[in-house]
Length: 285
Image (cartoon, rainbow, N blue to C red; front, side):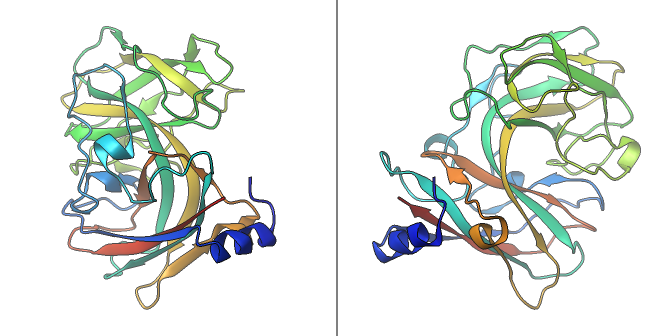
């Protein structure tokens, strides 16, 4: 783990640093105050569609198989860290724009809103990274539109290995844009966080065991296990927003080899026709 400026300087002087750029041009008409999964938008990297595997069966996510933001090849036995990110938007419609960089780990495709019976999930495949589940959170990404207002919860195994835990009840919104996060706001109410609340005392998830719809609706959503790495905010279009993780927090998040990275974002208006771009700087030691 990097704990000092000297370690950072030594890594950079040794050439153990990489820069990678990204650019996204969302076509979805997003809703103010609702979180959105930028991985489903066109651009570079190419979009990832979270309905591209058999429903309700856990599937691991990796850079080598699914893409995501570039962060450099494998460096083992060295360890790679997130040094800084920069982001900028070409239009102010959705600003200020909070962005959370996440490592996407595992997903359960196409949970059916219309099924009121308990939907048991297949966990033959397990977490590829953060295998103890510590700090791993859950998002629900819309992959087929719904009327809105229906409720669901899921049961899960927590980071201590205890099964039978129950999430908070999620009230689905009625936003039409695919990639919208189904958070805790009903009927387009703003969501404070993209992550679904866990049972009291829990801080992470190893697996999701089942989903229970309390109301029937049309539509599909995908549950994704993610590890949040860092948060930044784009406030204006005149200059990039830079987040230096070491200087601002004293800790540089680790990026595992073959991690799938992407952003969750909270627009204050539509992202359609807005180009978002930036870069990622990583170091390894």
